[in-house]
Image 1 (cartoon, rainbow, N blue to C red):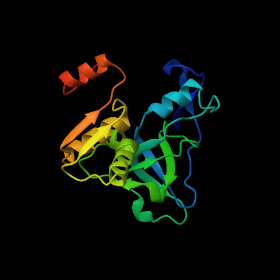
Image 2 (image 1 turned 180 degrees about the vertical axis):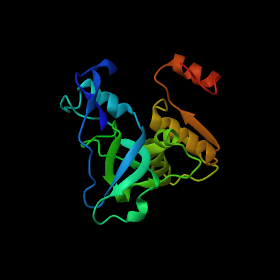
Image 3 (image 1 turned 120 degrees about the vertical axis):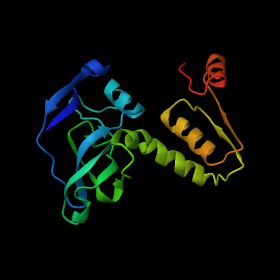
Length: 189
C-alpha cells in the first residue's frame, strides 16, 4: 500500500510517498480503507521533529473510510461499514491507504456525511462535545472559549452556538485578531 512518511523533519517537503506492506487487523481491530485522513496541529508538531518521533514515521491520528476486514474478536458485521476512527498518535499510520483501529473506537458514519467532513469533525468535535458536557453547559448560558482559533476552539464555539448559548465569547492572541473576528462571520485573518 502507499503511505506518507516523514523522510526529513520540517515542512511538508520533508514528506514522501512510500510503499509499505498491507496491514492486518489484530484481535479486536478493524482494517479501514482510508478515504480521508485528519491533519491536525499534532501532526504538524510531529512533522517538525519537536515530539521525538523518528524519521520514517507515518503520521495520522484519525481516518474515515470503509471497514474491509476485522480481526479476531471483532464482529464481521463491521465489514463494509463507513466509519471514522482515531488512530493512536504514538502508533500513527493514518496517512496511508489502509489503517487499523480498535473496533471499540470506530464510529459508524451517517450516509450523508462525507469522509472529509468526518475527519474535519473528528477528534476536535468529540473533545469539544465532552468539554461542554463536563462543564454542564445548558441552553441559555454564556460560554467563554479561550483561544478559539484552533480546531478544538472553533468546534467548541460552533457547538455552544448551535446548542443555544446566550452568548459565546472568545479570546484572541492580539487586538488585530480580535478586530478581525468581530467584523467577519468567516474570518480569514
